[in-house]
Length: 172
Ligand SMILES: Nc1nc2c(c(=O)[nH]1)N[C@H]1C(S)=C(S)[C@@H](COP(=O)(O)O)O[C@H]1N2
Ligand SMILES: [Mo]
Image (cartoon, rainbow, N blue to C red; front, side, top):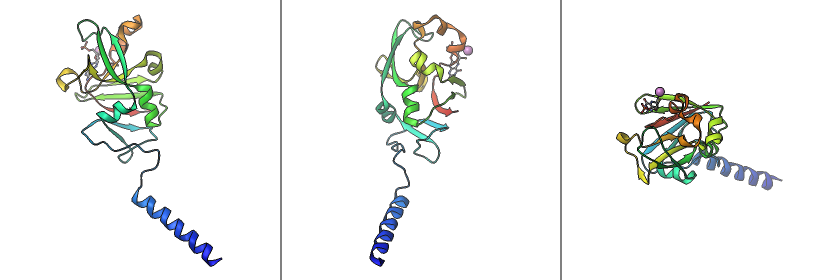
């Protein structure tokens, strides 16, 4: 009996010390290995820096890449933006929001209702025509809608959601 109890205690203490050395749970995100381009906070289940999720570009690219080929108010002719869908990003974060607030380096922010994610396949884009976007080129990350796929996207309501120079997302 004593041996069984002490074995149990030893296993328990190993599990506990393991938990202390590795406080991250199985659902946590990996840590960024290159510069952080996006910080997500709010109602998210998966984190890697206290209660936030910090992403470098390879982490975002690893979630998945989708392309949107469209005319936009900012480009001449049809261009191809590539990025992660907001739907896939939310799955990676363990989030099921009603809205997200997207904030930019210039202090601009906009709310995007989650219904847009699947309705329009909105992406957080990191490249245009295969080129990464510098900050002065409205990068490094920008929200992109398939503007020429639906007339409704021509309205101010949606262009105001096309935040460029994105650096933060708050999930609500
Ligand atoms: N970072 C950032 N994104 C932004 C803005 C901004 O000021 N900063 N303006 C928004 C608004 S209000 C609109 S209508 C569109 C329009 O951009 P435009 O000024 O190039 O027409 O971009 C949106 N994205
Ligand atoms: Mo606007």
